[in-house]
Figure 1 (cartoon, rainbow, N blue to C red):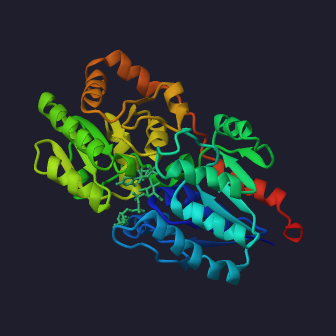
Figure 2 (figure 1 turned 180 degrees about the vertical axis):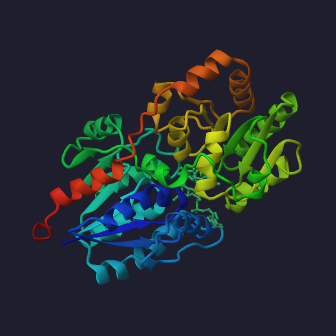
Length: 372
Ligand code: UD1
Ligand code: UDP
């Protein structure tokens, strides 16, 4: 029997790890447990509820206005107990959050092999996204098994001389759609339930640490200008719970006509809202993968992306964080129908919805309890 401990703590990790948790749970020969760090509290619990996943261990690390230092030290310290109690053969972590980096380090310190789901993403700018680019490089170094979503991610690892136990699996975010997307979906969030999606709707999110302050102000000011210039277009912005994000967003966008602000929506609402929107405007990582799958253009409010596949496929554009650049990129998609058609019909490069099955099959084939 292989013992696998799945560790995650934030909303995006949960969305991408729950399909894997469910796959592990019904696989013979594997005993799995879920450890949530609670780096996010309500945004994490929203996801667990949707997937009906129960945590076996909850480290409850979230503090108001937490720093990456405190997340790191709390996770490192609190991971000792589940590792000692469950004694996993492998610890599975996801992506690039501080939860993932610290839990991978905690496993390494116990000489427990780490499997990195969503391995090999890079911007090659150590400060953007911050601290995620460094987190993911550290996790690469700590991990034994690298589950790369795309061939491009595998090549990125190869360039760093990581060639052993690297597997191209697709991205588990595509697996998550089978749990969330419904044609006759009824929204739970009142702001969405009452919204007329037959008018052109721009669904937006922005939360990244490197965009806090002036870049986020630029983003909000661009949205104010766009809403004023396009009376037939509306914006929906579920606002991240980070107080630093909320202060800026509510002070600039609060009370503005055709700009709806609401609390974070659950992932069912989100996936179905993307599917009904005209385009997605975001600095999120995950939404760069989701929008292409749902046939929606995505404009990325960052200076670079670790997800060039969607740009190469033609569904995403990196538009920076300057007000004028954001305005002109959105305007182009609102007025140039040929461009809009081209961006909304490109194929999704992130997988076929079977990434979790592949990861579980690889784990079963690779890890024999007696040999680790
Ligand atoms: C974290 C990840 C980032 C990921 C993002 C997803 C790190 C360093 N960053 O950034 O990679 O893109 O999650 O959203 O790991 N808060 C709540 N309730 C919640 C969640 C957050 O109140 O349910 C507030 C807390 O005050 C917290 C703040 O948001 O201090 C920021 O959360 P934190 O996890 O530190 O950073 P994120 O910006 O969310
Ligand atoms: N998401 C959600 N509700 C929201 C905003 C985002 O369910 O109000 C989902 C989104 O669909 C994607 C993930 O959360 O799956 C992205 O999370 P986030 O942008 O916080 O993090 P990132 O992907 O940038 O790491």
